[in-house]
Length: 221
Image (cartoon, rainbow, N blue to C red; front, side):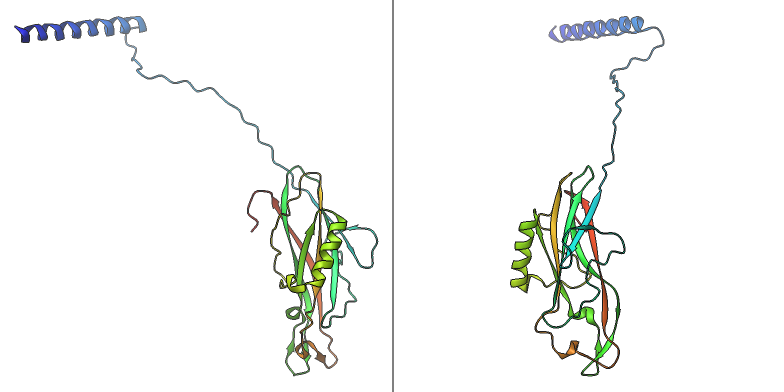
């Protein structure tokens, strides 16, 4: 008896569900497929603007009073330099951000060309191998002068090789602002006669500066 009542109840529920589905099918229109899941996607338009990284570099050395713009062929280092143990050159740079994105930057002193000679021992004298450089950064000119003086007094921080980039250490330049750096090139005092030439060929080197900038927050390669 109990089993018959359960079967009757199940049958009645099934009939009721079938009638509901039939009514729904009729309301939607004969032959229409019932969609159990519906979805609608709203069209969204996104506008992307490409930021402009606009870096301008100005320089000043010991023979100048005011900063001057750096062009591709600007000789920022003295062309009359006579390197000997302890000899140094300092070039002051002003880095301006005239774009609309913040950027980080690093510097390198590059060996563009050279003339080799023979040292007093009869070996090859390649002047670039005997030069070192360092970079100090600052937010203002007075700070830069103090930082450069400290670096000259403690030349252990001036140990980068030519064609090597400086470390990136809090050198972000914000939009519309400027920062300062000093490049110091020198021949270490301990350099010996391996850099002392003999003969008529004078060893020379042409130095250049590379400024590498990239949008702030990304890794400088």
